[in-house]
View 1 (cartoon, rainbow, N blue to C red):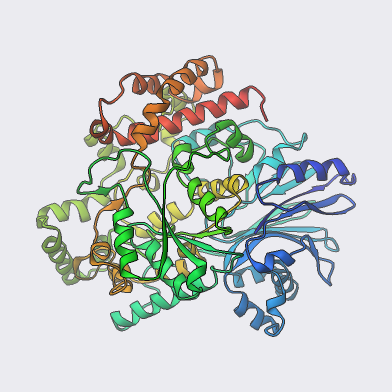
View 2 (tube, one colour; view 1 turned 60 degrees about the vertical axis):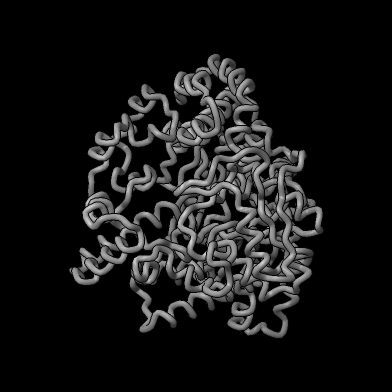
Amino acid sequence: MSDFAGLWRLDGRPADHHDSVRLAQGLAGRGSADPRIWRQGSFTLVHRQHVFTPEDDRERMPLTGPSGAVLAADVRLSNRGELADTLGLSGNAAALPDGALCLRALERWGTDAVSRFYGDFALALWLPGEHRLVLTRDPSQNRSLFIHRSAHLIAFSTRLRPLLALPEIPRDLDDLAVADHLILNTEPGDRTIYAGINRVRMGHTLTLTPEATRSHRWWSLPHPGTRRFSRHEDTVAAAAEVIDRTVAGSVRAVGMVGASLTGGLDSPTVLLSARRCLEPDRLIALTRIPGGPTPQNGPIRFYDEASRARAFVDHHPGLIWHPVGEDGQDWGESDRRRWFLEAGTPADNLINGAWFFPLFRFITAQGGRVILNGEGGNHFYSSHGGTVETALLRQGRLLALTRLLWQRSRRSGQSLPALIRHRLLAPHEPLWLRGRRKGWTTPWGRFAALNPTFAADMNMLDRLDPDRYRVRTGSPHSSVQTTREWFQGDEGVGQWAVAARALHGVDWRAPLGDRRVIEFFASLPLEDFIRDGEPRSLARAVLAGQVPDQTRHETRRGSQLGEWFSILTARRPQMLASLERLKASRTAGQVVDLARLESLLLDWPADLEAAEKRRMEYYFLLTRGLETAEFLAWHEGGNH
């Protein structure tokens, strides 16, 4: 794992020492090594290595191959053995770092080699003999790769900060992209909030020459039903096997390996699989516990996962487990301006991100640098099947549809007419009609403080794709493929992960978001995820006998940061003072509805239970609105 940046001067001027210094300083982060620089003529590459695996310690990128090709990559392969076997290197694979394996594959198969790479990667391949640059990314959400192209310069980086350090790259914001960021519109995915900087999209390759830029999509999400097994037992066995294989390729690490343990289905699956791969004294389960009062558990959410984690640990004697609370430390995660500098973007609900930092500090204190998590499972491995009923209806499978509705009714206690309304009719209700019925003024109004005047000036309503944006509003969608593509295409996840790594220096790995796992579960029929009317039935079947029944049959969702209201209450005076300062910022007031934020701060909930009923407004709309406004004021002040 690492960060890299580079530039290519198209006017023929040589890349100089100052270019390299700016890029190297922009790539600095906790735990990163000193920069390594490759420079030849008008082209330069800068690489800073993290050492998360034993192989990383031998990595020496930028690497030059026998053909003269030069590679810089942020890469962790989860299929090293398979790739080495295909390359005929099985006897020597253990000595090769991941970057060296990638370069050998690229020199043998060209850019088609990227389809053979499983794991997390973003890479830049410079072909000096062809005067050609190749930039590419895997289809997961764990990496970022940004690019600027102008008449005289191409610059690229895994982080925005190095590009913003180059004086030739304009820092002007793209108003439409800022508005899209605020309302969580993930399309189009190649834009950033900066007018002069785009991103390489997930599962895409950009090939750049002095004359042109060509984009090629090398990966697409499979469609449900393209992989079938004759028996349910075979599906469960194959599902368990693909997860074990992927996790086995994800546990390579220096020192202790942490594994997140929540009360859901995803993280226990990853933890159990990791336990089969590692010595018992190298794996430690970590559960984040609230640092303040939380609401009472309800029919939809539970707020403290410690009791469920304890039950799981009791089920598995010998497992090392630590509940982790607030530690009173700060590595810069609570400083918005530090985040603006590292990420180049708004903090995007900083209090929720900061909730993870005690986990990072804990594993670091144990001599570890890696934490496995269960992120990425909800739409694939532990999918509830989406609106499978609409798929059955389209296929004309009326008997199967009737049986499923009856099974759902028996399990949930809902009446058949209610299920028909929710599962068959609601996904086809036009978004404008749903909004009118629910009292929405705009589709984003419940969770985004976008200034109505600015939204009208930007013609936001007409620009949105209402069919796809309904996914963001929480409305059921008739196509699980659209829902999956929407959330899988959220570029903010990788951007946050890469920027946050600069602050904490820990590799936060998501095996269930690996391409191999996504391809397997995305291709299964939707019925496999809801057998006998039980949602998430495939994940429950994989975990049968391995977790307490309370966990396996839990239908509620665990809630991160259950103590959010006490945190915001303590920060309320600071937020009010910040809002007063923001009123002087032309840009902040133009984009963000500051009056609405002020109304929320003045109309403060009386207690925790009252606040929880307005969770979306305070925990999400208020915090993201303020963070976006503060970023805009910071940017307006020239604090780059």
